[in-house]
Image (cartoon, rainbow, N blue to C red; front, top):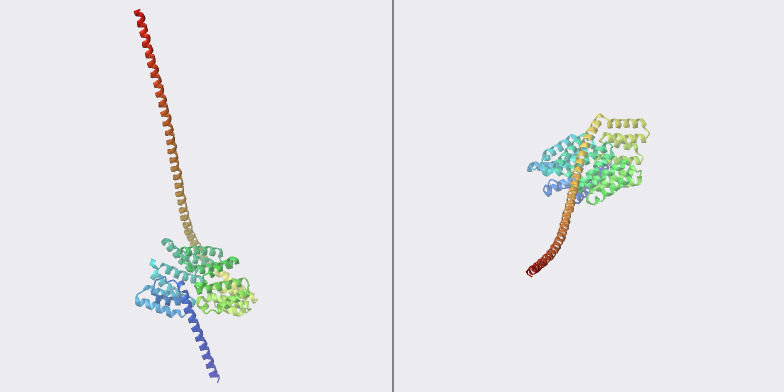
Length: 454
């Protein structure tokens, strides 16, 4: 009887599990059709292949993506089509990250770089993949490697004048600064990423950058600004299910930091009820929210078990330090804090800081070059406007001088004509006087002649 009862229970569980899978599949299909426009066909593959890829992107951390990735790669090999092979690899490496198979992740990305690195017509896909890869590198503590990739992206984008590459490069630098708790510099670089995102007309990335800035503002305690950026990101929720999930996760983090338990539980429950939440977020992000939930429900030992599963040393030490302090195990809390400080102050991190300073200098120089070019353009425009104004002044001055000279010439001609007329009259008067004198002289001469005759 017991064995039959156990079998019945097992069958019921299997039925429930299958039903949940069907519901999840239906919701994921719906999400693909709703969000397909947000998953850009950057490699211009055929619609059927792209739809398969879009399906995978909607559940990018799900291990079921591996067979799909393998099938796409095999199809690319069969057709000798590097674009389809790249799509298969692009679906593979996020799953490898989620499974902790970092060597396999590196191999997949290295092959993508080899296939697309020299092709300028694949730049947007290349930048997108390298940005996602760099995010994972930062999360697993390989910020130095991420920094080198960001430097390469920025140089390539600068040489080819592609704002999309600059946007992704600044996002990575912002994440590296966030990893190092340099939140002000993180916001500064992410703000630059927003500017280049708008210049590249790539607005589907804007909400994610807004949420990254919101996270940094929360860490700095600038809560009004954090809410403003969450609001900006939420405007895109209707276009993408992933944005909806990310906004809710950020708000949950915000309410936990503000110790608003009711609002946090509301957001957390909404996420738990969303079947896509597990497939649209990485394991560490979900674990962090699970730990928050357990801490608020006063279950620190269960939270410790969750914290021990975090993939990054810094995340693990940070959470366990707070949890041990919560239950009064101060010695263990001190050990976790000491390990955290050793991790942060290790020689490896110091080398990262030196390299990061170099990268910052290079990126700031690029920014300065951009601003200098803008200033040069403004100066050239100012000079051109000044030249046109001066030319206009000179031109109108010449016209005025010509008009004034012409007026003077007319007056001079008139005065000369009057002088000549006066001279003619005077000359005529002289001639008349001379004629009169001549007549008088002749009369006198005649008188004298007559007198002598008498």
